[in-house]
Length: 98
Image (tube, rainbow, N blue to C red; front, side, top):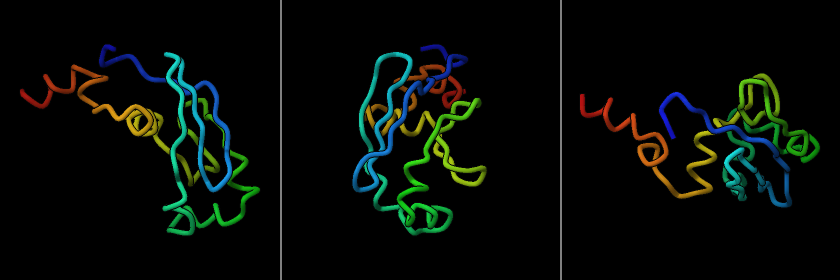
């Protein structure tokens, strides 16, 4: 993937026990466990399961619940795949080495 390409979430679904399922435009999909963040800081809104279930994808490709509560799509992708940022965006390595 080139540095200027962006991973795009195309589907997102709240699941039981504050788990989140996401599918990306390259076919990668999986679940992440967000239960450890519930009730902490801005994630306090997730104490209300109806709010957690209102998850959506913003036009700017973030995974969001409100204007204040979003997750970076790249970070979610890395967590699902277990890959590093340099593995999915090789140009980052060149920037770090410069």
